[in-house]
Length: 86
Image 1: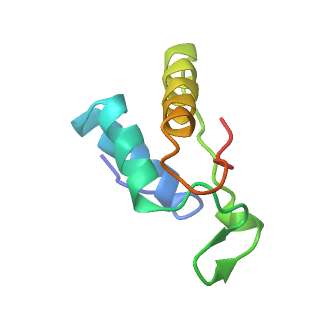
Image 2: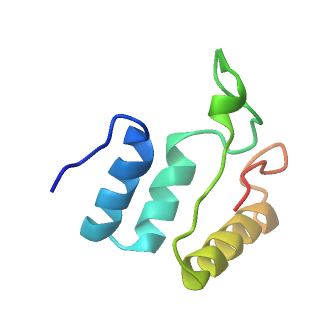
């Protein structure tokens, strides 16, 4: 199985990880790996390509993603509101 396609390598890699670890663990890793409260930027990198977004493959994944974001917001994990969209 090819791990990535040249047009969307990061999305392909995340799809591959979802086969190895569960979706809940994937969400946890996603929110640890970057600052989801930054809109269109990650650190010094700026632009629309840095939009924090989750592309759910099913209604269950969408529901879990929204639940996880709401949980992080309720626990005030970040100083600013989470900008990640689902």
